[in-house]
Image (tube, rainbow, N blue to C red):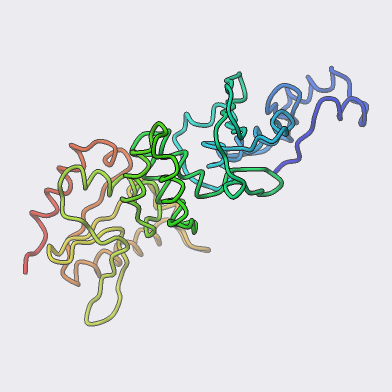
Length: 301
């Protein structure tokens, strides 16, 4: 993480002029995080850019408020939709009105001490409270993703259930309760979570997640989903390019052959393979067609 620099610090402590600041921005030596705050030029993903924005905004939320909702998701590493990080989200315990500004979205509501933690110096809602807030406030799809991700990160599901129960009259509480009941700690990606939700909606048989494929008593592969009785496995890794799967010293063609051999072992164990992408999973008709074809093509014993 690049060090956060503030205009006052650069001008007062380091003798920069406003001309120096403008020149540094034009040359990408400094990148503006928000008014009055900069970081050194760096390649950062959306989550890191939001974490930088959180740190730049912390002085505004030091009055007992804590980072929450989508911003807490960034701190905990829970995936959220791309449009969720346009502002820093914070919650202040107690009643009264919140406010929405250009950079800060402040909520006011009940927040127990047990639902607050500190991570890398950032006061933030706990993993469990964050999952519930996301499941209440986001769509059903992203609520399931949040609960799966929190469970995979080690959230105490009993505590999540207790928080949901304490909010039974709050907006979105029923949606959060449903997402919690549907949670699968074995989900390893948002794509697996949304795929499982769509399968449920489409009425397909419930799959086994992280399905082990054996041949002659030897484990030959672990697939994202499997239907033992139907001799079908599902792989929702189509969004990755083979170049993303390279091992140290490998060429792209090596990864292609490695995946080809893996598929041959799965088919050799008597399973058909269906694959789909992120785009397919978010379009139910596409996923229905892929899985229907898979169930029809799988070898039936």
